[in-house]
Length: 130
Image (cartoon, rainbow, N blue to C red):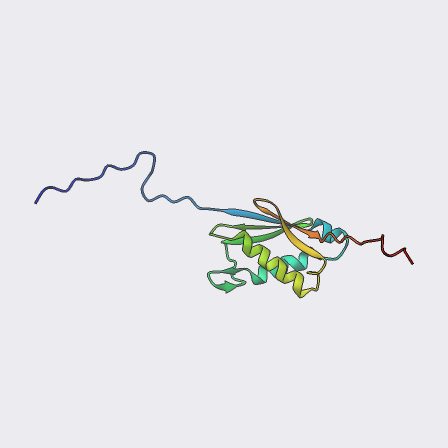
C-alpha cells in the first residue's frame, strides 16, 4: 500500500476561525410619522414581538436587537437574518392597521427600507367637462 500524501494547508486561511456575520437593516418611517399616520414606538414593539429567532417569536435574546432612532427603526442581527423577512413583517403590520392601501415598503439601498405613499394620479381633465 502506497503512503498517503498529506495536503498542504491553504495560505492565508487559519483553520477553525469563523467570522461572525452581522447585518444591520434600517426601516425609514419619516414620511408616515410626519403625517402622524404611523407611530414608530408601536411598530418597534410589533417587530420585537414578531421577529422569530430559532423558530420562536419574541425570542430575540442577544442575537437580534431592535432599536428606534427618531423615525427610523434599526434591526441588528448577529446571526443570519433576511432583509426580505423585515419587509414581510412591515407589510403585515401595515395590513393589520389598515394602512396597506396608502403606504408601501420600498427598498432604497442595500440595507434600507422606506415607507412611501403610493403615487395616485387623478385625471382632472374629465371632471370639468359637464
